[in-house]
Amino acid sequence: MDLTAVFSGLSDYMHSAEFRDVARHPEHPSAFTRQRKLPLPTLVTLLVSGMRKSVQAEVDEFLLASNNRLIGCVR
Image 1 (cartoon, rainbow, N blue to C red):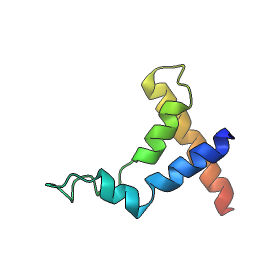
Image 2: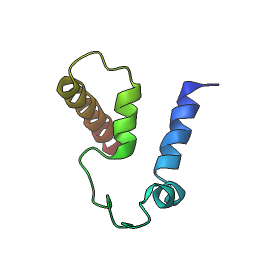
Image 3: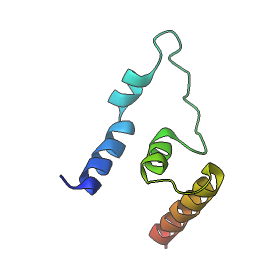
């Protein structure tokens, strides 16, 4: 199985309403509904990318690369 397809499917699922409903705590349904700087799908992608440096260095590098890809898509 192609890893790109696996990660794409995982990302789609983590952005879905189904995942949101399953992941919410039944007693606190509004928990974790804010817009985070490092949302769960991005965090999972970072963790499975094979971190080789300190966490802060990996996060900084990952976010810089993500922002550059987003900027390239807008142009």
